[in-house]
Image 1 (cartoon, rainbow, N blue to C red):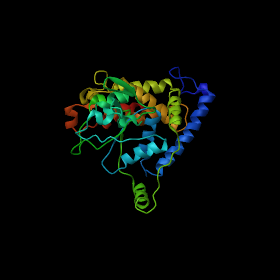
Image 2 (cartoon, rainbow, N blue to C red; image 1 turned 90 degrees about the horizontal axis):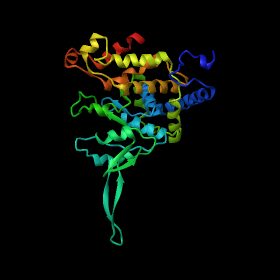
Image 3 (cartoon, rainbow, N blue to C red; image 1 turned 180 degrees about the vertical axis):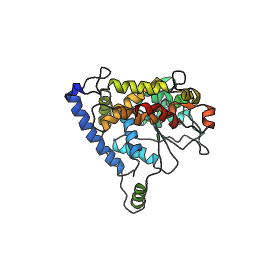
Image 4 (cartoon, helix red, strand yellow; image 1 turned 90 degrees about the vertical axis):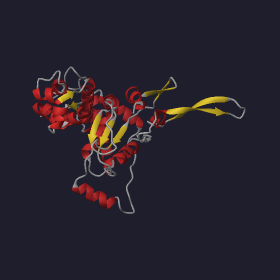
Length: 327
């Protein structure tokens, strides 16, 4: 079978060619090295690592949700090292001010007594409302002056489950800027045993750089050249549109969902399945990729009705119902 005969290739994506296919295969091998390097520091959590890598090479931002102590922040720091990126941390405490993220202008006086303003960059320039423009437009505005952010720029946020005291829900507009919401669970027995042995001794393994920022940017461009077949496109549209109560033909969706995912969810799922295919060295995504990634892409872009929550229905239950016809 030739590449142009691939059943997953259609008019909705560029047709396969040998050059791009070879680059996808090479990048897939490179990203397996990245996964291995991360696995030397973060034990277990293969799905979390994969989905975080998908987010990065798709050019997006992700929200890591899990109880304290599951190495969420360590994972973010490790990713920064592995990709050769500068990372800075913002603690989103209740007293956080926009200037704490963006930076501010300070008045300085030189030796001659001349006064001038100097802009001191905040943590957002390393790579709550102050992050909206940064996440969507890759620029911020300070004192009426737009300032471009460096490239690549990614926000990897960590959050405790909303059920925990002192945790507050993020606004819908900000949640929608996150490419994925990734649930971080406790490691399995073998991973926790390894963690117990290797992190409590005198010798500990640190992260090492595998790729550069320039290679990451190149990978992000390659992801967008991966072709997507008609069947995959239709599956994405079917799942996303069926999740909107005003469009869905499913009575349970109409009764259980207060508001559903918008077009940005379709765009994110399209990029996500392309990125997953690249990570695995495949030239085109499959329906399985769509089903696998629907939950992390959609769960923070939907809300349940009060009646559904009272009945114990979860967003993941709803997404499972949406993906069932395609599984």
